[in-house]
Length: 299
Image (cartoon, rainbow, N blue to C red; front, side, top):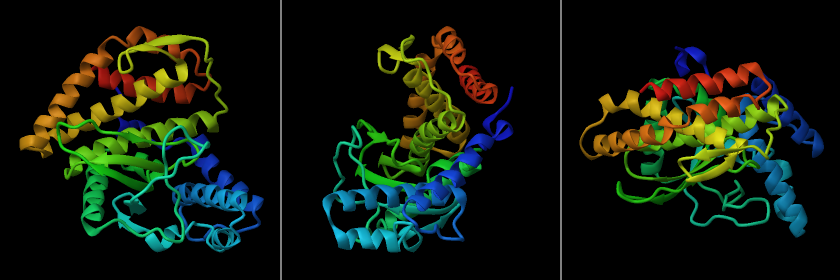
């Protein structure tokens, strides 16, 4: 059975989508993307630039709009630091934005953005390294190049982490001071970004009438949400099974409990997952989703 390392998170349609989307964004505003930027890094930061410039224009803020047009990377290169998966922007803003573009709060890189404190940067680097060491480096390199730290939590707290479709390549995460736990959440959110990009790159529009039982939500969900869950949670299960040997103490207990819980959730999804996959027309994408789900079922 293919593992993520063997299967790979590089997906040819997405590899074409990233530079083309960057080109279109900058053509729209007659700007030029930084020449040295990797495609995935440029893709993530170009969307901060686009959303920031649009918001500034709508607000009539000429100074802010001028800053964005002068910084088509939204200032990301000045903030970026090296990690095991490439240059990443790691920030910890004090306040998020709410607006009609997203059901959840978010943050846009802007002239006042500064890097996260040193402790956050160190935690992020360690988490990216663990993800890379366990076979998920390509996933994070392509889909988690901007990390927005949210609140600090404890092992027994509820974690809130998310992505928004308008900012692909950006992840928002609560955290504890444990790189193994942070890597788990980076993989989960990067997985959502990966699947959104893959669906867009293949022009796949899922039937939203068919419903599938989600054990995570305890309710029927359309194919889009169900397949997202049956992709992102199995990725974290595979990662967790691999990283457990590197953990000890409270961190090991936390991740062991998480893996046990996810096994119970995933166990009954087989028939619905097989049925949902029939709605995915692209055979390569369908195989990626099937292989990861099957590997996680076998843990």
